[in-house]
Length: 127
Image 1 (cartoon, rainbow, N blue to C red):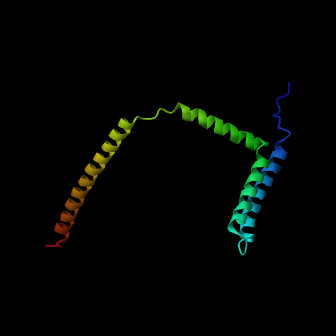
Image 2: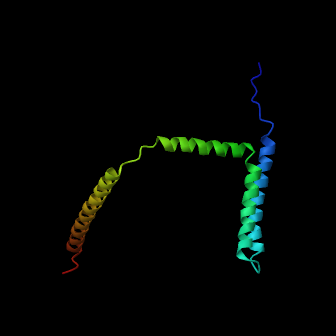
Image 3: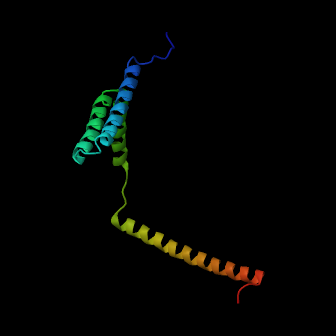
C-alpha cells in the first residue's frame, strides 16, 4: 500500500491556465488605456470585455473553473435553505429597531446633559 499523496497531473497546467487568464485580463485593461486617446469608447470597453471573455474561456476547463462552478452550485443550494421573513415580520422588526434607536437617542441626550451640567459645576464655568 502506498501512503504518498498523489498530486494531480494537471496541477501545473492549471497554474499555467490561471496565469494566462490573469495576463489576459490585464491585457484587456491595458488595451483600454492604450486605446484611450483617439478611439471610440465602445472599442475600449470591447477590449476589456474581450480580455475577460478570453480569460474565462481559458480558466473554465481548469480545476479553478470547476471549483468556482461547484461553489456557485453550493451557494444556490444554501440559498434555497434560507427561510425568508414575511412582510409583516419585516415591518415589525423595523419598528422595533426604530423604537430602540429613539430610546437610545433620548438616553444619550440625557446623559450628555447630565455630564455637561456636572462638568460646568465642577469646573466653575458657565452661568
